[in-house]
Amino acid sequence: MPSTGAGTACRKAALRLDRLPMNITPVISATGLFTPSESISNEELVESFNAYVALFNAEHAAEIAAGTVTELAPSSVEFIEKASGIKSRYVMSKASLVDPTKMGPRWPERSNDEISVMAEMGVKACQDALARAGRDASDVDAVLCAASNMQRPYPAMAIEIQQALGIDGFGFDMNVACSSATFGIQTAADFIRSGNARSVLVVSPEICTGHNNMKNRDSHFIFGDVATAVLVEAKDLAPHPHWEIVGTRLKTVFSNNIRNNFGFLNCATPETVGTADKLFVQEGRKVFKEVVPMVGTMICDHAAALGLDPAHLRRLWLHQANAGMNRLIAQRVLGHEASEDESPTVLDTYGNTSSAGSIIAFHLNNADLAAGDTGVICSFGAGYSAGTVFVRKVA
Image 1 (cartoon, rainbow, N blue to C red):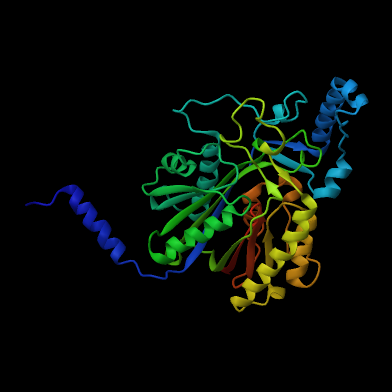
Image 2 (cartoon, rainbow, N blue to C red):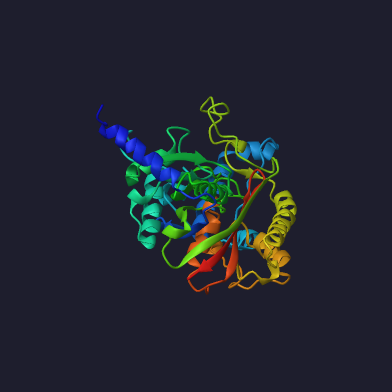
């Protein structure tokens, strides 16, 4: 019987996979970044928050006087910068975020026939990465959407991004909070090593302001919105320069100190939506005390396992959550207080962008390194979760 077109295509695909060598070296060919056009300064944020506080205290004056409601305290630029190191953040919906009567993102709901907001952000970051690598979407085998703040549970955001890019392959979502991108990079690297894919996009679109409580003095300033993409490929495909993935390591330890209970099981009535722990909440001091030593030890142990001296790492691209945490982690790893060159910061202008933070730091601060220079991309956050990706520049 003559071969059908479909049968021939299947045999060709099978032969191609059979010829793929195992244990292929994975590399980062390029990264991409989408930055929203709007930003909010600390001054603007404080003005908005304090207007909300004044409205709340006036509305509940009788209850406050009776002791049944706690009076809200105003925020300040000095408080924000001392607590976090953040000076501004990029956002997708500025007007409603700084409106004292709304204090949350608002945009018109899109129809099911239109691309979603989160997918649109992710596509732009992916297109940037592909362009930097000189790669076409048809060369990519898989899309992993690795992010904290998913717009919906299904269909997977990764599949929508895959469709919009025109990729013939597969995609799925991953959520390990602020460590999602590094977990995604290891997953992509494992696909490359096993021969199950040759080119994988790890995309992290983060609309963090959607889950932030803008009415909480302790957290109203923390988050911003952004999207990043990392193109992980087999070494023989990679352009020059690129970054060889020397090793990856992941760690999780359960903790309630960073939590978000939003979900259809916990938000069954309109009264519960957007209240208390249905948005981002954390025990900041506990997180600081427990995560800093965990991450510092993890980086040093992983470096030693790879035969690297952590004190001689050329650069640390750390998760951008808190300037104080990063300073102490870098000091534990390097043995001295890190310079801006050794541990660059994007937190001051981007805010905490969850899984995207360490990738933004890498994206904006790697071109000056020389061939052979080795560094680590490290994320850490809710879970607790942490991931390390050691990379070496190849010219």
